[in-house]
Length: 203
Image (cartoon, rainbow, N blue to C red):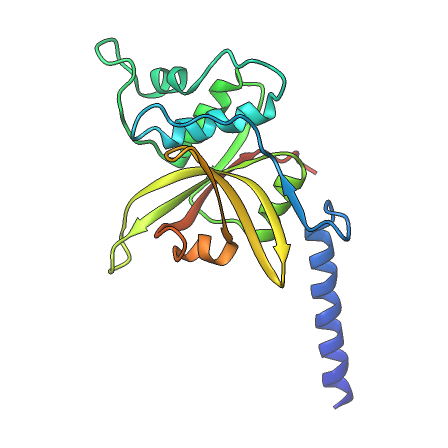
């Protein structure tokens, strides 16, 4: 009995240490962060990936006028002489390249086809970096059938629930829902499954 109790206490201690390290950047008592700005709507139906990239750099370059926009990113990544600004969808990796290009390659991004934890997203926002995310539409058999990119701009905790706020360039509005509803699609019928964030420095 004593060995089991000691083992349980050790596990709880380790979990507590890990939790503290994950949320180390957020001071105790802080329950929300919002990175609201004059974000822009997507210029064409399928440009959510490019508009979210532009909006990420709008925040990162707060106070400065951007010299490149979603139009420039689409031209650079998808355009051709006969169709410089095609209304074409892009991947989370295209969002990464677009954000880097719009920043004039002054900011590096990391993209992946995975969702990040709530604590990771909170810490990114707290450190003043909005996060580009992709969420997929899935068939009943679990096949991804398209998706939509948005920009996570805020987080909050209240009444024991974890909330995220994101800017949707398709509707030009902010939306707020629980992290769980954002992940499983119960809020907007899309499941969070892709992430693009400012590259963390190597420690």
